Image: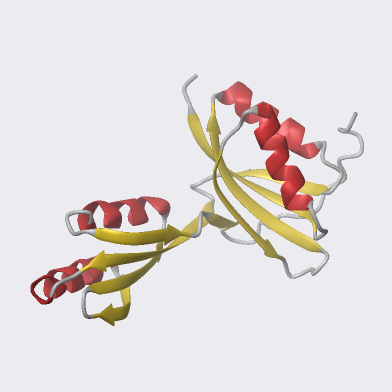
Amino acid sequence: MGINKVVIALLVENNANVLSRVSMLFGRRGYNIDSLTVSETNDPSISRITLVSHGDDRIIEQIILQTKKLVEVKAVRIEDENEAIMRELLLVKVAAEEAQRSAIRDICEVYKASIVDYSPDSIVCELTGKPSKIDGFLDVVAKYEILELCRTGVTAIDRGSRIMVCEDFESHRS
């Protein structure tokens, strides 16, 4: 029973302070949120929160049970990395003298990253992919000076015809 990283998808009412309530639930219980993305769904009254956390099986179970108790939460699901498409966006600014630009462009080509900005002393690269691909790219460009970076956090959606729908948790709340 080791520590597992888990991707959790939530459908929540698109109301003010819902994100605050979800994140406070995690904080009060001592659970860390490693990554968090939020967006409106095709139904403007519902938002989708995708978060990454970690813990042993008991902690993960508690996270799910406690999250389901929030009134605004309409569905909770642990995303299976074999059944879901998971992506993240990275923007990274790398110090680049003229002599280094060619090597950095080659790395971008291998990882299918785009160079979105050139300046006299830096290059900004954009990469979308699985978190492991992002990590691999960062490992390779780390030999250059990384001036700045930002990652969006993981977002996920199931493959095929399986969709996430709002559920009624009234019977689970106490």
